[in-house]
Length: 139
Image 1 (tube, rainbow, N blue to C red):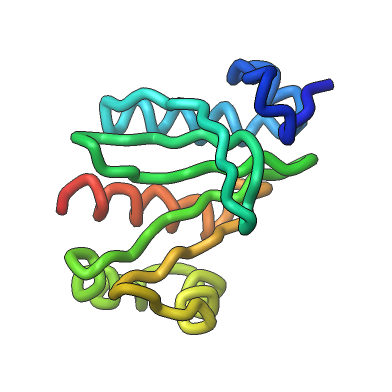
Image 2 (image 1 turned 135 degrees about the horizontal axis):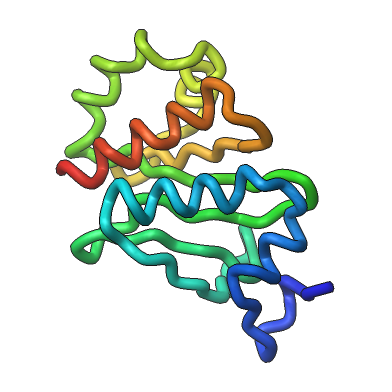
């Protein structure tokens, strides 16, 4: 089993998938890669908020989504920045009620909100995460 806190031993994507133990992780990564023609980058974060290994999906230098591995699920962090705020709020009524609640409860900092979406099935939040990634890719 991998140690997500061990900076000296970077895991590969397959090891992260084994740690998560949810096939949705691989589906989500594949969907991001194919839809946005991007690759994942496994990085170590030393910040006190979420220390450890994570996976970033970037397109044209902009992070579309950051994935934080958990046991049996993963957390997708998506940023609603100044450029995305208006179009995101316009489409919010078409998204899941859960995403609306997360958005309302997330504090804004420097003109952006960092939404943390716990994904464990292909429900509304899964679709919402992909829609928000598409919005980030377009801006």
